[in-house]
Amino acid sequence: MKYFFLVVLLLGFITITQGQVSGQIAGGAGAAFGLDGRATTDPFLANRLAALRKKNTTDEEILGSPYLSEEFIKSKVYFGQEYVGEYYIRYNALNSEIEIKETAYPEEEAKRLLANESVRVKYGNRELRFTTYINKKGETKNGFLSIIEKGKNFTLYQRVAVKYSEGKAAVNSMVMPIPSRYAQFVEYYYQEEGVNRIEQLNQKKGAVLKILEKEDKDVVNAFIKAEKINLDDEEDLIRTFEYMNSLDSSS
Image (cartoon, rainbow, N blue to C red):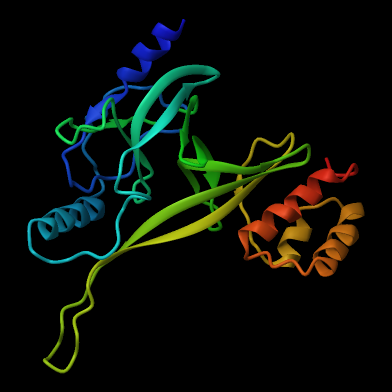
């Protein structure tokens, strides 16, 4: 059985040109492993990627990184509940892509693991899972989320992502140029037990209380006040969801 999953996983590899910035993963959360040979039909995206490739051939310094870590980290890979094996993983948070190698040797070409909802990767201190979620704009997106709290009432997810900001040339000798940069940011998502929908969490207190049953709002509000909870702090946010999961009346 393990051999079957290993074969399926290996069929999902596609070679990555080292240093290339690629587009967003095509396909939905239910997409199977396979080769992604389709070209983008989005002219804006094509132009942006072409500009990025052009920049990468110049001496211009781009601050930051599209990766959570530039290093490939030895990680455990699962397909459903089946353990596939250990591979060297690098997570491209700009494109929400997993790059994978069988060894740590720099001469081995990295592959891109095509996304599938059955894939789980134990990457460092997080577990990356490919899933479908809804952002604050109401847009349905696909990408990798990490579960940071799971209980009988709610599951809390973390999404670490990277955005690219175009630099600006100096308009004159009195003004310093602004370099292009990759900037990392974090978002949080939640899923109510029994609801097949993962939504971005608004971390304001009123918005968090709004997702609760009526009978739980007052007790959670009292907990936040008594514990001096800062919902912008991840540790406090996790503590709040742990408390929400301890309540009996939430569904």
